[in-house]
Image 1 (tube, one colour):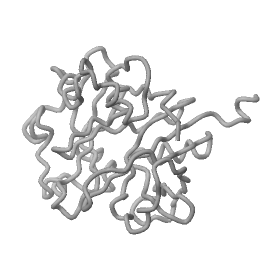
Image 2: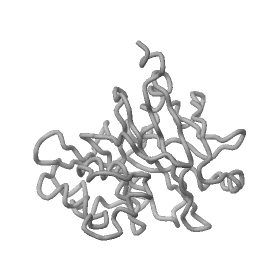
Image 3: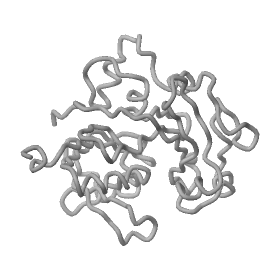
Image 4: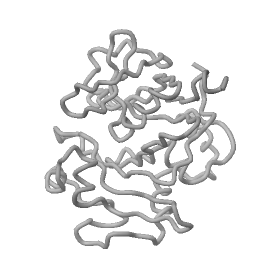
Length: 250
């Protein structure tokens, strides 16, 4: 597979998500806060109340804390701090990435199928999700339903539950995106498949936009990377969205 990111996302908002450590049975990703670049000075705030429950399948903050969540280290507990932070917010998240001055930084970006000019901070965070192996945090681009074109690397949700089916699925395999409106957990669920094999799902924080794109755009998806430990494997896909050919002709 020789597909690379040609139209990286340009988000003004990224959702901070958290997943419990490997020893915890419930490893669903939770939406816990919002990084915003709508103003010249980026801000961060924790989700609270009804907004939190809406983004987390009607579960409340008490359930999250039972899993060990105590807030993002740079900003402290959401119970103890103010509703919004503006001091050194972008720097706090960029520290999750290797320094761009490192000689191997281009190789790092190639893991996310990007080769090209320097990326602005929000695009860089969206493309990499700013994941660290030492914690469960990630920055998720919920994607722009009105975007004309977009290429982004996404983690395949639920991949570790499908390993008995997909061990033979090779990197570079093309994935079909299949809506699953009868899913009892999330009616916006989008299954990722190759042939009759389920590889996993689109991240639920991105699934609603992906559904919109499936109805209004041309979508192509490839499995690009499998890694992680044997008891907790992970996989990533490159999602490419373009206008429908009929739209181009018009």
